[in-house]
Image 1 (cartoon, rainbow, N blue to C red):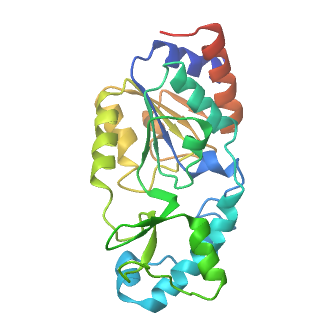
Image 2: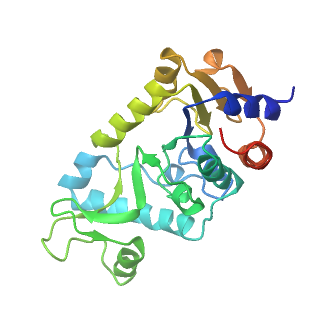
Image 3: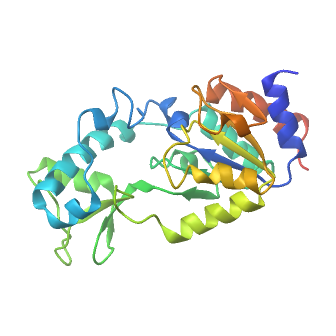
Length: 253
């Protein structure tokens, strides 16, 4: 049995399958991993949340980094992996996608239940009053000379609705993700190094509650010894092949 066939078999048997995605699924859309040699952290030191709140200089550095990220995200489109997960959800084969990514490509691809553990880069918000803007609106302000844009309503700093280092994880999303992990009978860890906590604890939590763990990643992870199946093939190729077979030749449960 091939790896594709084995994964299709697991999905056909599952009654509560959950997909967990990391940066690896979006690199196939041209978005570099933050930690890669070409990633944003190779050019910009991450700004801690407390620094952002306290220091205008830190906010200027933050927005220089965000400007680069916006350029990378602006034209990115969902790839075969994103589309396959949306198709598997429509076919009733997965119940949700939990993602560490901030690019919003799962929703663009058509996934309906997406838990964004690290927030989203598709929304800018005031850290005080919460009023929201689009990244495009803020980029225009940056291009016209603003270095660290503030809210035009209350004057507090604007920030991407992403989770920065030192910023608390979103309570609702973490609770939802933990509940999904505890009730999953199949947990697909896709394109994640499984080292960034607390998100990386979710596959282990699912395993501890009886889920079959499948890892699709191009490099070893700390949880490989727990996995029933490990696939090193490209994510898009893998998920596209599996979802096409399940969705069309064996629809429904």
